[in-house]
Image (cartoon, rainbow, N blue to C red):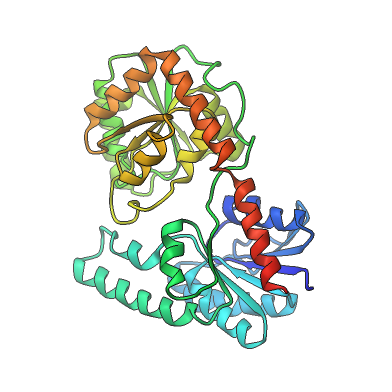
Length: 370
């Protein structure tokens, strides 16, 4: 049985949570020699027994599409691994060339890319549909030829099962214990609710900041992440509610942990666009893992998880007053908040954790190498 694995990405960072922290390190623990090829210009290194190989910094999207593939393929061939695990749609042609060399190839679909195109607000409707149809047809043609599909959600898995029978969902659930601590017990002078992740209009930043105008308690909103739209950033900083916001900027994993240790609730009030209807937001499960109650959008799948596990409150993400009411409820009823936090943590310990997903990943590799 071969034991050399090579993960390939031209987009994600070398310490990406799903790729490096979870998959690569789990494979090392499973006895494999693991390489990770990246394109960030930070040089080669070995970390946590993972060999990180850098092809050099790639520029914009077009350069990544037309140049990164050749450079990644060259490194991949040199490594001569038994299995290649691709993490970006633009690397599928690289995977097909490796497949023709007799290699085992896995495509990891982090998102439903053709469907995601339909949610691009800066494209006109005709262009969105044309790109989505093209990508869907290419995906069906190409993904029949790889050995297996790894999907980030059950919804994406079910789509690929119609294309490739060896399709499994490896959900991006949190690592057990990563965010554990005395959550909610080290509250600052003002209680804090938090939002951690990319910050933008479809992620509900306007409504979150406006909600702070209606909050009756002395709660503050801490946001950790980068704005993806400069005009939206300028806009929300003019809102009256911004006076009750602490902008923490981008946070590494250690600082995320510190924020969650002070939070009385975590917000995940994303808009119910096509991208999110069947998504499983990582931040929601990280809040739960930390024992932090969740205030989430009333998307049916999320309602099932949050209210089904009694670990938070679901609201209309377009209604700042509903968000404010949920925040005040958490502040004014600390016993309820604490119980919801405990319920969320129990749900993660039982079901929504990486340790369960790790078993599925290792089982897939074992089957492919038989």
